[in-house]
Length: 166
Image (tube, rainbow, N blue to C red; front, side, top):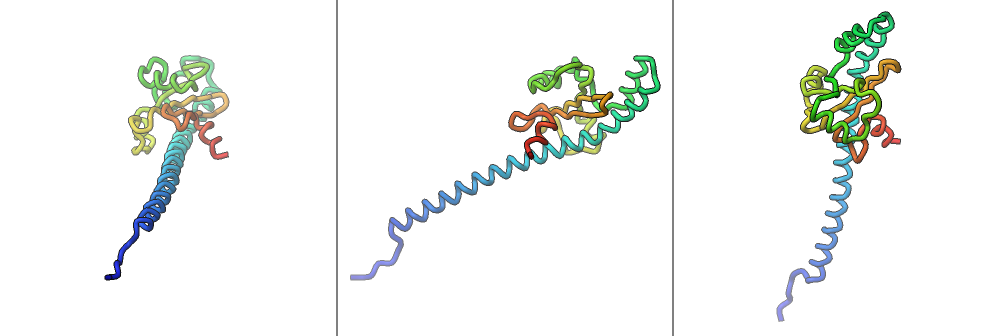
């Protein structure tokens, strides 16, 4: 008889099983890397927004120390704070309410339009991709809390997202 050369059915089966195990491990870690990249991207964008808007809060706080008229404070805010008032804004307001992070005085909250983001030099951030960025300006404490309406895994504020790294 002639000697037969070839692969046995058992060898093919074992090869396929090993390939499936390697593929599943790759998919699992690949998905984890993609999720981590999305988190880092959102966090970076929120930190950039916070840094670019904080100078306006500092300016309002500085200028408001020397006024006694409430209407002048509104003029100072409109001249220095970036964004549109969230109150009565329609879709941005509805999405912001769904996060559960809008509390207290609604007049402290502003949202950023695509034009505001472009003016800040953040041309790659679009609201249809990232959702709305909501800002809570705290003039007295000179701070800005950034809230994203899409969020990441149930975390919507910059403070919550920074806490994920700890």
